[in-house]
Length: 624
Figure 1: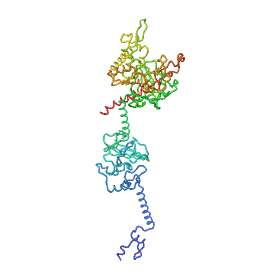
Figure 2: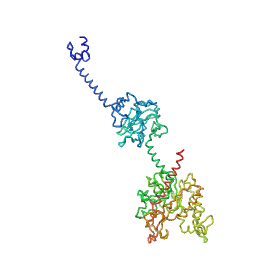
Figure 3: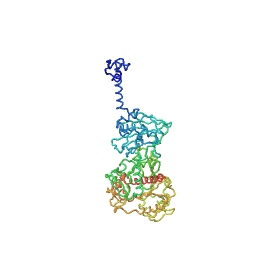
Figure 4: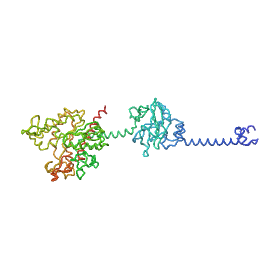
């Protein structure tokens, strides 16, 4: 009987006919009232419900990583989970399959994710999660849930934030992420961590497409990787974001640009800029007609009524390379703090005005580009200088049509006659000898009657030649100029250019005898119609070859010979004199060039020359 009672189930009728209430009162004397029984049942049900709720709906910031890892969804609203699956997370918790590491943090499942995904361009993902197993995961890198800021980091010297930007266009093998901003402003929590006494603040930006996580110990970052400056108290802190085998995005993009830029510079360095053709390019001109009020009337063809505009739409294309379109903003930077000087005749004034208009077009505040003496017309004075105030440089013109001095000597009847001193360089030479970039030219004035005939005009010392061949006179003048350059110009400071002869296209006469070009609206398209290379330029080339100073020869003769369409012709001025009104077609300008127009291409070549110079100068520094 005793044994039967001992093993009777609770609530079963006993020999004493005890019911369930009697049994409970016997076993649990504390439950003496119906109210207490009700409370006990309610508490039990509530506890079970809360437990189930917490189990299947864990908080993102749950203090138990194991609990979160088991029940968290594989895709969170903010970012994908860093684990393969829920099952693998549970399995790895009980049976640790992670590869060993010298750093304890690598074995810690709470350790923040690898920050080396911090790039700005697409690339194949090879980065891994901090607690990734030795087994290869998906190539898609997933961000772990944000850990509390109080997580201890072993050997930590810097804590920063990295931001992963998951785009809807990202594929399984590639993704795009942005570099961490210097300071993030968001409603997310600020995480503060002490590192070596310095306080570094990082902001977790919990947006719909990004998750921030602290970076691992600086000891994990390879030496020699790019840096980013971050604020650490009052002192800047450098953090490296790179890993072997993964190229950072900014570096990748800049490397691609650098490679293409290097290839461009190498091709330009080997290229003959002056053997090519003119090609139609509707993206030209480099500045809009009428946008530059500094153009002289004689070059302002559109303002003077020229109806056709196709002459502005041509780009010079060398045979063996492609000239870069002139980037005025970059040219402004190249010239910052320098003096660019043009020395020569009115064709160099043509080029000078072109350069000013190209550069001025890229300046925001046009009022900070002005002629130093306030001049608005650029004929009749010995020199002009435009200041680009924001960039602290000048673009200057010194009028010297022969590069040697025009002179006067007493004549037999007591008057004075004009001569040309072949042995004296121009009077203004001391004013520009120290300039950073000097562009010389001469040519057209050597074709005028007085110089071409050479009678009683050329002088050396006190001797005036009764007659001297113009080519010999030109050789002596250019030799005088070359000796001055070798003696006075410092080649380590100054770059010297000589722009060659610009072709004229007078048909039926010369500039003062009815020569015309007003009917030309298209360039020459066949080389057989080009004129013979000027003998004076062959003389110049021989002189340049014998100079000690390196002079870059801008041989624009052939390229300009194609452009019979680019001259002002009858559109050289608005207000004609009474004689010009009688026969306007007689007085045409087929020597100078409309602006915008052909001289813009000369400046593009000068720009390319400067780029190549800068590139070559940097190469030895890079190798060193």
